[in-house]
Image (cartoon, rainbow, N blue to C red; front, side, top):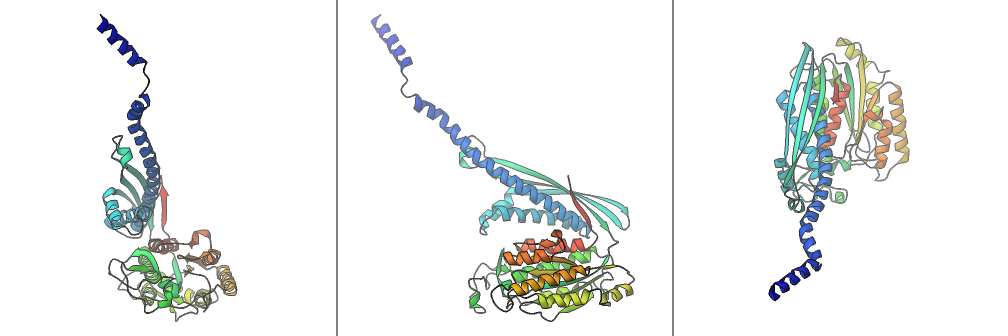
Length: 419
């Protein structure tokens, strides 16, 4: 009996004893707390990726629809869309050209699309593009304590484009910066070369004897050449009269070009089609030099297109077209310095006055401030005919997209994002 009493007393004492409760509760709740903390971090990242993926899919659908309205095949349009999504996601998620991160992104990202084409006549068609993009996010180790290893984030985008062959005729003049800063690198790696002279503002004083380094980065002028080539391709695809082997190659599109640094270079006069102007741009040196002054180049472009000069009107009338639109694309990566290295308020003011005169004559100005400083952006924003005509890309991909968009706006494409 005594033994039983002692046992019962010991049991009651155990029940009343509160020591060790904290340790017990910690052991039970710590995994949950760790998992919740990890999940909070992952949710933040999921929201960021969802927004980035949605924007990428929307833009890719719009680009694919527009490309098809310009004559691109369905297969190529889908490849373009997938490449666009990959590029946009990489810009947002991959830092410092991390090759391992880029390869992992390619594994985690997936995009599929469908196209529905409605043909209303032999000269008109509507393209409905539907894109679904998905990204598999690996959960961090803290979240994995709760048993969650990964989550798939999905975004859906749709765009519609109409193709019409009743494109208006146009005369377009490219006014392009080829100053020394256009030799500076972008953040795009040139995988076709193992090394090259990677000029930047900090090492420009070593021109032309800078030692080659690796990796090789695409510089600004090469980016511009790519952008102009894409613009030419877009214009050709929208041109119902375009024939690569024709003479002339177009009966609707006339393009001229002039490059400038502290003064204007010899220009490529306005000619039928895009080939002559594109060749002119492709022949700009890989490493241009000099300051920045757009006045002379703008004068050349304006003199060629102004209403008082009947050359363009006569050319289009001779091709059987009574009405045509006039455009100037003004591009710079800097601010107006003249032959010096410092901003010149007088040159800046003079260019603004020129732009006002050009616009008053009915010529539309598209302006592109490529990786430009604040004063360069301010000037080109003022020169643009509207906010929709102004671009300030900061990457090679952005520059190419800007020139492609300008080409689309200069033609009669009807492209819109839909729900």
